[in-house]
Length: 119
Length: 107
Image (cartoon, rainbow over all chains, first blue to last red; front, side, top):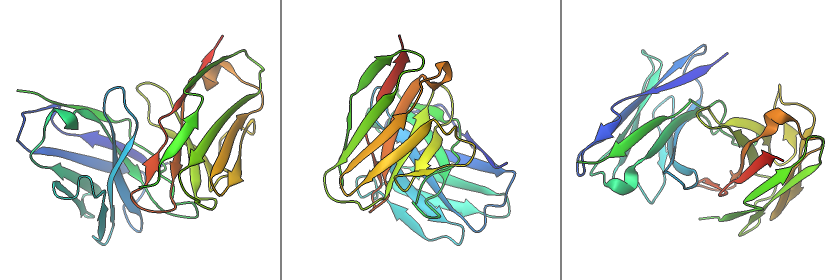
Protein backbone atom coordinates (compact mmCIF):
# COMPACT_ATOMS: atom_id res chain seq x y z
CA UNK A 1 0.00 0.00 0.00
CA UNK A 2 1.15 3.51 -0.72
CA UNK A 3 2.79 5.40 2.14
CA UNK A 4 3.91 9.03 2.37
CA UNK A 5 6.59 10.45 4.64
CA UNK A 6 7.37 14.11 5.13
CA UNK A 7 10.93 15.22 5.93
CA UNK A 8 12.73 18.47 6.51
CA UNK A 9 13.90 20.90 9.20
CA UNK A 10 11.63 21.28 12.21
CA UNK A 11 12.81 24.82 12.93
CA UNK A 12 13.07 27.71 10.49
CA UNK A 13 14.02 31.32 11.24
CA UNK A 14 11.67 34.17 10.36
CA UNK A 15 12.18 35.57 6.83
CA UNK A 16 13.96 32.38 5.75
CA UNK A 17 12.74 29.57 3.50
CA UNK A 18 10.88 26.45 4.59
CA UNK A 19 11.72 23.37 2.55
CA UNK A 20 10.01 19.98 2.91
CA UNK A 21 10.10 16.75 0.92
CA UNK A 22 7.51 14.02 0.70
CA UNK A 23 8.76 10.54 -0.18
CA UNK A 24 6.24 8.17 -1.71
CA UNK A 25 6.67 4.43 -1.23
CA UNK A 26 4.60 1.46 -2.30
CA UNK A 27 3.47 3.01 -5.56
CA UNK A 28 4.72 5.21 -8.36
CA UNK A 29 4.33 8.94 -8.18
CA UNK A 30 2.91 8.66 -11.71
CA UNK A 31 0.13 9.26 -12.82
CA UNK A 32 -1.24 11.07 -9.79
CA UNK A 33 -1.70 14.52 -8.29
CA UNK A 34 0.11 15.27 -5.03
CA UNK A 35 -0.68 17.93 -2.45
CA UNK A 36 0.54 19.82 0.58
CA UNK A 37 -1.84 20.74 3.40
CA UNK A 38 -1.03 22.35 6.74
CA UNK A 39 -2.58 22.82 10.17
CA UNK A 40 -1.42 25.65 12.44
CA UNK A 41 -1.64 24.89 16.16
CA UNK A 42 -5.22 25.08 17.33
CA UNK A 43 -6.53 25.91 13.87
CA UNK A 44 -8.08 24.12 10.93
CA UNK A 45 -6.60 22.48 7.88
CA UNK A 46 -5.39 24.71 5.04
CA UNK A 47 -4.81 23.58 1.46
CA UNK A 48 -1.42 24.83 0.20
CA UNK A 49 -1.33 23.45 -3.34
CA UNK A 50 -0.92 20.46 -5.61
CA UNK A 51 1.33 19.23 -8.40
CA UNK A 52 0.59 16.77 -11.19
CA UNK A 53 3.33 14.21 -11.83
CA UNK A 54 3.98 15.94 -15.15
CA UNK A 55 4.67 19.20 -13.31
CA UNK A 56 1.57 21.38 -13.59
CA UNK A 57 0.64 23.09 -10.33
CA UNK A 58 -2.17 24.82 -8.46
CA UNK A 59 -1.56 27.01 -5.43
CA UNK A 60 -3.80 28.54 -2.81
CA UNK A 61 -4.01 32.26 -3.73
CA UNK A 62 -3.37 33.13 -0.07
CA UNK A 63 0.13 31.62 -0.36
CA UNK A 64 0.79 31.69 -4.09
CA UNK A 65 3.40 34.47 -4.02
CA UNK A 66 5.58 32.45 -1.61
CA UNK A 67 4.97 28.81 -2.59
CA UNK A 68 6.67 26.47 -5.02
CA UNK A 69 5.83 22.77 -5.33
CA UNK A 70 8.05 20.54 -7.45
CA UNK A 71 8.24 16.84 -8.31
CA UNK A 72 11.11 14.44 -8.88
CA UNK A 73 9.72 11.30 -10.50
CA UNK A 74 13.13 9.58 -10.51
CA UNK A 75 13.20 9.73 -6.70
CA UNK A 76 9.43 9.27 -6.24
CA UNK A 77 9.36 12.52 -4.26
CA UNK A 78 7.69 15.89 -4.35
CA UNK A 79 8.69 19.00 -2.45
CA UNK A 80 7.38 22.21 -0.91
CA UNK A 81 9.21 25.49 -0.71
CA UNK A 82 7.68 28.38 1.26
CA UNK A 83 9.68 31.60 1.29
CA UNK A 84 9.77 34.56 3.67
CA UNK A 85 8.21 32.63 6.53
CA UNK A 86 6.75 34.21 9.64
CA UNK A 87 5.39 32.81 12.89
CA UNK A 88 2.04 32.42 11.13
CA UNK A 89 3.60 29.65 9.04
CA UNK A 90 4.19 27.51 12.12
CA UNK A 91 2.14 24.40 11.49
CA UNK A 92 2.05 20.67 11.00
CA UNK A 93 2.64 20.13 7.30
CA UNK A 94 1.06 17.12 5.60
CA UNK A 95 1.64 15.68 2.17
CA UNK A 96 -1.13 13.69 0.51
CA UNK A 97 -2.04 12.01 -2.76
CA UNK A 98 -4.73 13.88 -4.61
CA UNK A 99 -6.87 15.51 -5.66
CA UNK A 100 -7.94 12.77 -7.97
CA UNK A 101 -10.59 10.29 -8.92
CA UNK A 102 -14.27 10.97 -8.48
CA UNK A 103 -14.59 13.37 -5.59
CA UNK A 104 -11.15 15.00 -5.79
CA UNK A 105 -10.26 13.75 -2.35
CA UNK A 106 -6.89 13.44 -0.57
CA UNK A 107 -5.87 9.85 0.19
CA UNK A 108 -3.60 8.73 1.70
CA UNK A 109 -1.86 11.32 3.85
CA UNK A 110 1.51 11.37 5.55
CA UNK A 111 1.70 11.57 9.33
CA UNK A 112 2.73 15.20 9.15
CA UNK A 113 5.78 17.12 10.31
CA UNK A 114 5.78 20.08 12.68
CA UNK A 115 7.62 23.13 11.43
CA UNK A 116 8.18 25.94 13.90
CA UNK A 117 9.14 29.40 12.73
CA UNK A 118 11.20 31.06 15.44
CA UNK A 119 14.49 32.85 15.90
CA UNK B 1 -13.26 30.77 -1.20
CA UNK B 2 -16.02 28.37 -0.19
CA UNK B 3 -16.54 28.34 3.57
CA UNK B 4 -17.53 25.13 5.36
CA UNK B 5 -19.27 25.35 8.72
CA UNK B 6 -19.23 22.21 10.82
CA UNK B 7 -21.43 21.57 13.82
CA UNK B 8 -21.11 20.80 16.58
CA UNK B 9 -17.48 21.71 17.26
CA UNK B 10 -17.32 18.91 19.82
CA UNK B 11 -19.55 16.25 21.27
CA UNK B 12 -19.58 13.55 23.90
CA UNK B 13 -21.33 10.29 23.12
CA UNK B 14 -21.62 6.83 24.62
CA UNK B 15 -20.53 3.60 22.98
CA UNK B 16 -23.35 2.44 20.75
CA UNK B 17 -24.82 5.91 20.26
CA UNK B 18 -25.77 7.25 16.86
CA UNK B 19 -23.61 10.31 16.11
CA UNK B 20 -24.41 12.94 13.49
CA UNK B 21 -22.09 15.71 12.31
CA UNK B 22 -23.20 18.37 9.88
CA UNK B 23 -21.28 20.44 7.37
CA UNK B 24 -22.80 23.44 5.61
CA UNK B 25 -21.20 25.07 2.57
CA UNK B 26 -21.37 28.80 1.85
CA UNK B 27 -22.52 28.02 -1.70
CA UNK B 28 -23.77 25.01 -3.55
CA UNK B 29 -21.10 22.37 -4.12
CA UNK B 30 -23.17 19.57 -5.65
CA UNK B 31 -21.83 16.37 -4.05
CA UNK B 32 -18.19 17.45 -3.92
CA UNK B 33 -17.80 16.94 -0.19
CA UNK B 34 -15.39 14.56 1.53
CA UNK B 35 -15.05 13.48 5.17
CA UNK B 36 -11.87 12.63 7.08
CA UNK B 37 -11.07 11.18 10.50
CA UNK B 38 -8.01 12.49 12.31
CA UNK B 39 -6.43 11.11 15.47
CA UNK B 40 -3.57 12.97 17.21
CA UNK B 41 -0.17 12.13 15.77
CA UNK B 42 -1.68 10.06 12.97
CA UNK B 43 -2.28 10.67 9.30
CA UNK B 44 -5.79 11.93 8.52
CA UNK B 45 -7.90 9.14 7.04
CA UNK B 46 -10.45 9.44 4.24
CA UNK B 47 -13.85 8.06 5.27
CA UNK B 48 -16.37 9.28 2.72
CA UNK B 49 -15.88 10.82 -0.72
CA UNK B 50 -18.33 12.60 -3.00
CA UNK B 51 -20.79 13.02 -0.13
CA UNK B 52 -21.93 9.42 0.23
CA UNK B 53 -19.31 6.99 -1.06
CA UNK B 54 -17.62 4.85 1.60
CA UNK B 55 -13.86 4.58 1.09
CA UNK B 56 -12.57 1.01 0.89
CA UNK B 57 -11.72 -0.51 4.26
CA UNK B 58 -13.84 1.96 6.23
CA UNK B 59 -16.38 0.30 8.57
CA UNK B 60 -19.96 0.38 7.35
CA UNK B 61 -21.12 2.18 10.51
CA UNK B 62 -19.86 5.35 8.81
CA UNK B 63 -22.14 6.93 6.22
CA UNK B 64 -22.51 10.26 4.48
CA UNK B 65 -25.39 12.07 2.86
CA UNK B 66 -26.35 15.41 1.38
CA UNK B 67 -25.97 17.56 -1.68
CA UNK B 68 -25.97 21.23 -2.52
CA UNK B 69 -25.03 23.03 0.68
CA UNK B 70 -25.96 20.65 3.52
CA UNK B 71 -24.15 17.43 4.33
CA UNK B 72 -24.10 14.90 7.15
CA UNK B 73 -21.65 12.33 8.46
CA UNK B 74 -23.28 9.63 10.58
CA UNK B 75 -21.72 7.01 12.82
CA UNK B 76 -24.51 4.51 13.37
CA UNK B 77 -23.09 2.91 16.51
CA UNK B 78 -20.14 4.69 18.10
CA UNK B 79 -17.14 2.49 18.91
CA UNK B 80 -14.23 3.31 21.24
CA UNK B 81 -11.83 3.63 18.31
CA UNK B 82 -14.02 6.35 16.75
CA UNK B 83 -12.77 8.99 19.19
CA UNK B 84 -11.17 11.50 16.85
CA UNK B 85 -11.66 14.81 15.11
CA UNK B 86 -13.73 14.72 11.92
CA UNK B 87 -13.29 17.20 9.07
CA UNK B 88 -15.29 17.91 5.96
CA UNK B 89 -13.58 19.17 2.80
CA UNK B 90 -15.03 20.62 -0.38
CA UNK B 91 -13.57 19.68 -3.73
CA UNK B 92 -16.00 21.70 -5.86
CA UNK B 93 -13.51 24.48 -6.53
CA UNK B 94 -9.98 25.56 -5.72
CA UNK B 95 -8.76 26.54 -3.29
CA UNK B 96 -10.01 23.38 -1.59
CA UNK B 97 -11.21 24.19 1.90
CA UNK B 98 -11.92 22.29 5.10
CA UNK B 99 -14.35 22.66 7.96
CA UNK B 100 -12.96 23.53 11.40
CA UNK B 101 -13.52 20.02 12.66
CA UNK B 102 -15.76 18.18 15.12
CA UNK B 103 -14.10 16.48 18.07
CA UNK B 104 -15.91 13.27 19.05
CA UNK B 105 -15.20 11.91 22.51
CA UNK B 106 -16.51 8.92 24.44
CA UNK B 107 -18.48 9.69 27.58
